[in-house]
Image (cartoon, rainbow, N blue to C red; front, side, top):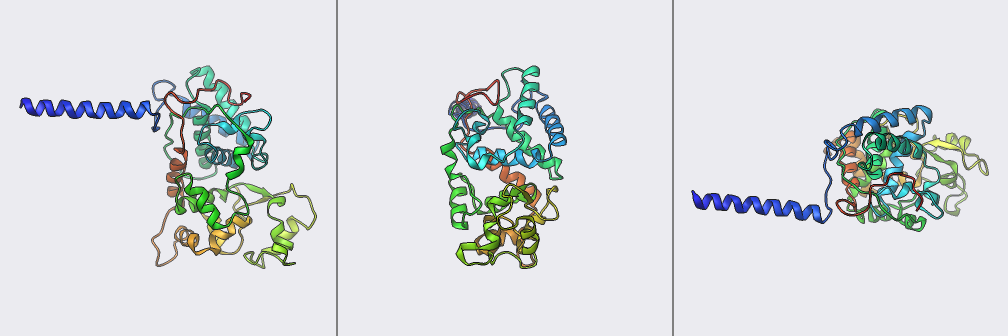
Amino acid sequence: MEVFSLNKITILLFLLLATLTTLALGQGTRVGFYRTTCPRVESIVRSAVQSGVRSNPRAGPGLLRMFFHDCFVNGCDASILIDGSSTEKTAVPNIPIRGFEVIDAAKTQLEAACPGVVSCADILALAARDSVVLSGGTSWGVPTGRRDGLVSQASDTANLPAFNDPISVQIRKFADKGLNTQDLVTLVGGHTIGTASCAVFSYRLYNFNNTNGPDPDINQAFLPQLRALCPNGGDGSRRVGLDTGSVNSFDNSYYANLRNGRGVLESDAKLWSDPTTQRFVQRFLGVRGLPGMRFDVEFGRSMVKMGNTDLKVGSQGEIRRVCTATN
């Protein structure tokens, strides 16, 4: 009995030490991190997102893109929110993103309710989830406990996934963040909501790769529609839905559009034309002979996985009192 007790104590001490070591190393987040320190955090963020999207519908997909672009640059640390010259926010890929005011509104309310407690990085993670739910997607538990980064540099955005990346490059960029090919196809499915400017895809419509013709991945029946929206030499800032026919609904119709040659971005279209990624698109579409996957469920899982990329927790980073504080 005495030996058993000693062994039990030893095991408990080992587990306690392991837990303390994990915390000391700043690893890991958990759902309900603010349960006692700021219990209303999720309802406050949700309310800010709902209000912000009502005022500016582009804020919904913008918040999702914002989180994605933040996590892919030095981890999910809210560095994309920092104002100043040559910060991430000023980088070309981030200029079109909308919704920064939503994060500021949530932060203002949280500072009034529980000052100095909730990080901007966690607000952004929660807001991204809430924007998906507001668009008809399925909710998921968001692990929190991140701290905010101290550095934001536009030059660090060079490795963000780009609209013209071939599949091999897309896979490498995701793998660099610990994300596999299934995560890639799943997370890019976030394009089921939102728009892109003509400037980032109209080259596919007229003289693709100096061929004097369109990108062959574009369905010939879809081509006139895109050309009407983005005439040759026209307004490059005009916005076009990435998921034709379902631009405001978070669903798997995006993958059906890829299958039907109606992908707007070149990088999206390649998800279907390349067999490496096509099989995952097929699984989301329920193609016979392949194990099916539910997009809404897998999206939440991959978001949690991405959201734990290169975190700053514990004694790392800071809790920013103002999310858009100058760098």
